Length: 282
Ligand code: AMP
Image 1 (spheres, helix red, strand yellow):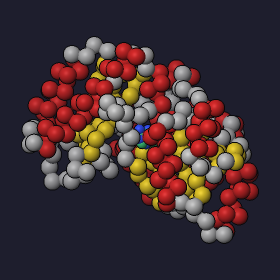
Image 2 (tube, rainbow, N blue to C red; image 1 turned 135 degrees about the vertical axis):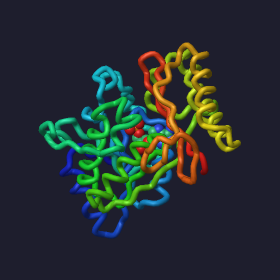
Image 3 (cartoon, rainbow, N blue to C red; image 1 turned 45 degrees about the vertical axis):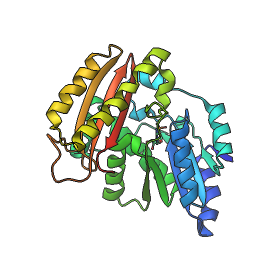
């Protein structure tokens, strides 16, 4: 695996491959890699000739300085995992390479960045939109691989690509979970053992709510039961638990005709914030 630190190095290495008709796949990450990231790499290797992974902890998408400073960093292990996974290039830029100056551009995603993650993490999706635009412009991949784990981010990036006519395909990879149901996340590394145990409540509540919905229970009574589940887990603090349309993120009062709906949740375990989601008809 070649490690590229600058935009120029990326251009020098990838231009020649693109002109020989090789397809390039990009897996953008913030490092502290786990099996979820590796699944993206695996799928990328199936669909793209050349796989580029980026590791960049993007400061502009953190609305909380402490979360940014405490974001897990495991670069040596990441390199080992990526090498083993057969990644061709790692783009590992310094912050100044991506942000020679602080951007004055800001991206307003309308309704999409005003609810759930957008409302609890103001400015987050502006930072995501800017960094993803930069990575797409630098790497110029044919396909970008994204995890369903960050469903609202997927919706945001789909709109970004559509509205700005980025010439890239988007491939979504299903969420990879631990055996006990917890979605893999770099932030899980920050959980102490008791919080890690407690974190099971998110996926438990999501799968419970999904099966109740499929059994035709009304959403309001499901939500009440979910709130009670969280109230009986003192280590967890539920932030939101909502039924939404999967692409447009409109909050629903109940399942209607729409066949593309998901439940999204966020909860704190101490100062660690985790998110997860399930789609209802998959
Ligand atoms: P991150 O490093 O957290 O920014 O994530 C990089 C990419 O990996 C994003 O597209 C995430 O949605 C995806 N990802 C993170 N966790 C998982 C998971 N458990 N399963 C599948 N994809 C994931």
